[in-house]
Amino acid sequence: MNTLDIIGATIGLAYIVSEYRAGRWFWPLSLLMSGFYAVIYFRAACYANFGICCYNFVMSVYGLMVWHGIIKTGERRVEDGERPIGSCPARYWPWIVAVTVVLTLVFRWLLGLLGESTLPLVDGLSSALNIVGMWMLSQKYWQQWFTWLIVEPLMIGLCLASGLYASAAMYAVYEVFVVMGIIRWKKLSI
Image 1 (cartoon, rainbow, N blue to C red):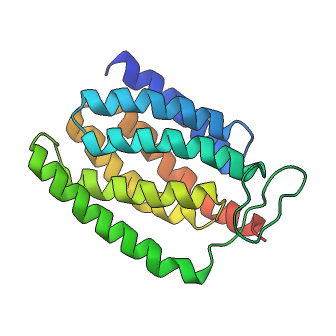
Image 2: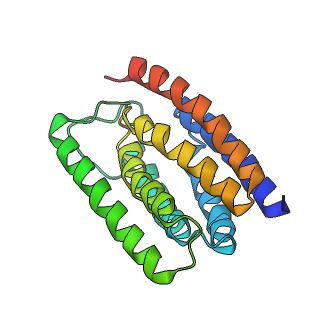
């Protein structure tokens, strides 16, 4: 294990606890985690996930502004300065599935062209789901947890194959929080 992997995993554990709580430190921790993992994934030749970290950095800024009502999206109102947890409208689901499939195929193809990705299909699928999940999270939809239910086992495999053992352990802990997050956010949704 390298030092950067251990630091990234430590930040990641604080991140998942904050996401579970829908806490105010979630988005700043997301910014920090995205920066650390961009370096980690680039060094491990997980290029799609490196790109996702860059995307997550931008989405963290966007999510912070949406959650706090600076950017208005959808019909849900901001209460006490923060957007409530809600449910993803049914009309979005066909698009969510289509975007996930298309992005997975595009990423797999691009990673195949590069020829350096350790697991191009896993890297591509986890990246596609990450894009969709971060968008859903920025909208504060409780169903965003289902994307992570699929992503975390993929990331465990990817990290183990890349020698990122602290990160693999972090994603195993994430899977427990995902199940708890589904239950908690569903109860809190309006």
